[in-house]
Image (cartoon, rainbow, N blue to C red):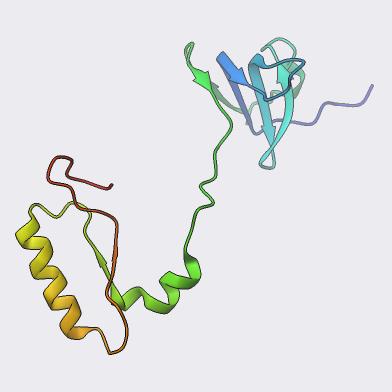
Length: 127
């Protein structure tokens, strides 16, 4: 009988979302080389465990697959980064307007100043 592929990491002890309609949750997940190796319960994955396997007990928590935020503006940011003004976490409208004035002075014509992020008098921080 062939040996099971060794897992680098086994996550266990919780509800692990699989996104598989036939088996939406499992209680253990084995990972090797950055990919899911096997799913099931801890006993079913024991054949993949070695002395080097990192065991992560999630203590009843739910584990969901990683999400990738694919909303990016790489080209715009690369071309206009020095002409952008970030207003995240600016404490007041007066400060934001001072920043805008300084940015307008150093932005070459005919370019527009691009304000990215947001300013809010009621919700400081990223908007």
